Length: 173
Image (cartoon, rainbow, N blue to C red; front, side, top):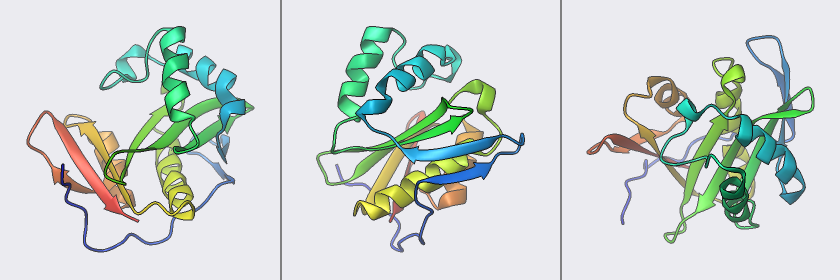
C-alpha cells in the first residue's frame, strides 16, 4: 500500500522524559515505556472505558491485553507513558509496518481526557520517534472523532485518505 505523506518534514518535537502541568493542574510525567511497565499498563487498560476503544484496541480481557502488549512492547516499537501520581493514565505507541513506516496509537484514561495529555503524548512520542530515526508516521481515526483529529492536525498530521468511515492521517518526521 502506498500512503501519501506530506512533502515537508515536521519540525522538532519534544523528547522524553518530560513533565508538564495539564489543564486540570495535574503534574504529568511523560517517560519512555518498557517491559518493566507491563503491570502498570495492564492495570490502566483494565480500567479503560469500553466506549473509548476503537478498531478493537485496546483489548478488553486481561489475557488479550497481555498478548497485545507482547507485540507493542517489542524493541521495534516506540512506547511512551503518561503518569500522574505514579499511576499510568496514558500510553502512546509507534508500531512499525511492512513499509518502513510506523502506525501511531494513543490511549488516555477517560478521567484524564480533555486536559492536554493526549496532545503532549503525541508530540513527545513523535520526538521520541525522531530520536529513533523514524521518518514516516500514520494513523487511522474514526471520522466522527473530532477531538482526536484536532489534536493530530495541531501537531502536523495531514489527511491522507478519507474514503471510508475511518480517516487516515500522516506526518513526515
